[in-house]
Length: 245
Image (cartoon, rainbow, N blue to C red; front, side, top):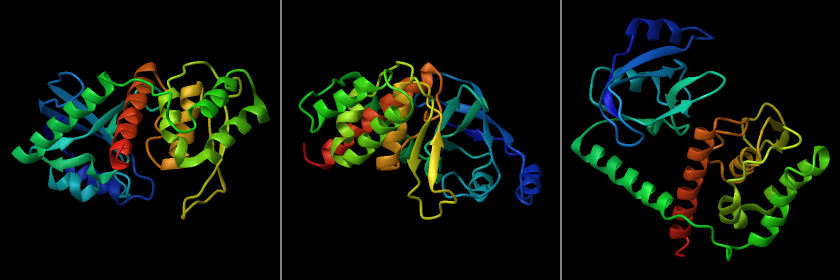
């Protein structure tokens, strides 16, 4: 969306100086919505601790009261609310004629990809991925973990095939998945998630392979699942373009 943030400057400064700051609610006067419906106002929840996966405190202060493009996502369970999207500092940008036009064009492009999407059964590894996914929802415990491990093992080559088949809303029999933590700054060897449905577990697998998304690895609402699947479909289309397919 395009809007102006009413940033509580003093509270942000106070919380930023704490070791464990409180979340801030930043009201937004909405000027226009590029994607996701129509709103006149909104409130984004912001954690005033600088990290590479979100807009910085300085960026928020610099754009306070000024026209900005905000890439936001709604969380429907747990800490319900609206947050900056994408795990990136680029979720907040100055709003200029150029940046707003580019954002609208990208939103239109993504909508066209999702609207025209269809499963391609000729993708590399499609049959093996299909067999593995079929087992999910039927097996539990170690057998379920082995299916996820095998999907991760197949790697980048089958990412499009997984995406093509990931919108599977069957319940998992064991709501747990453990994946090796490859992060350079990892404080634990294994990442543990609590997916509820097959689609959640496959989001975790794809995140493990590509480092992208991972928003429903612990479950989510139907709306969140639909949005995540759509995001992965755009990712797959972009991947095919990069590979010249």
